[in-house]
Image (tube, rainbow, N blue to C red):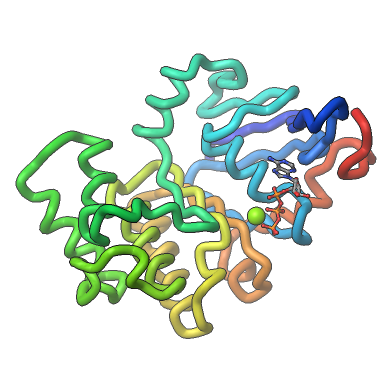
Amino acid sequence: MSKIIKIRNLKKNIQQHSRTITILPSCSLSIHKGDMVAITGQSGAGKSTLLNIIGCLDQPSSGQYYLNQHDITDLSCTARSLLRKETFGYIFQQYWLINHLTVVENVELALLYRSGHCRSNREKARNALDQLGILSHAEHYPCQLSGGQQQRASIARAIITKPNILIADEPTGALDHDNSMQIMQILKEINRSHGTTVILVTHDREIAGMCNKRLPMETLFTKKEQLYAQA
Ligand SMILES: Nc1ncnc2c1ncn2[C@@H]1O[C@H](COP(=O)(O)OP(=O)(O)OP(=O)(O)O)[C@@H](O)[C@H]1O
Ligand SMILES: [Mg+2]
């Protein structure tokens, strides 16, 4: 199968006061189209930082990022925003639902953003919420939902557009075991039936074991660097 993502010596530094801090040491990885990948590693290892770069939400400080064999490391803001819209779906660690929209409006917004207004959008959004078991909360606001319910709403929003690549940062982090297994079955089904490449971060060995590929962070680092080493 073809490589959908190839990353070489990707590194992220941030500037803190007068110091340059490395928050993602130089790392390399390849992901094939249709893979279901679990990125694992200790807290603070840089998993979310790496995922944000893969999802074109952030840019690396150095290194190369190839998406579908195209070097997208230095794309313009506009081109990156188009990629976000057309290629990726996101499940964020902190959910990032919009507080002043109802749950169903939050999910519908993903369709509006992807392909514009369509009469069937509301029904599709309700179906996605039903699939995730929270249709009864469709008209509630995010602040009226528990953490696990917000997580399921954010998953509905991510999968409704059937993205080519689904980026999921600890998608079961706020869920109990049964709900986690149910979410994983949904992600596996999307992966299988739509060929969606799923890249998820997890601390849970059982969740990682359900993916067809596991990438522990420590195996991705290309140089023996230490987090917080002065660059
Ligand atoms: N904007 C920032 N400013 C300063 N430090 C940052 C910033 N973003 C991330 N970091 C630091 O970079 C490191 C990597 O953060 P990241 O969120 O990628 O870790 P993680 O592996 O996802 O951790 P967790 O498992 O707890 O979610 C952490 O030590 C974090 O404190
Ligand atoms: Mg994280």
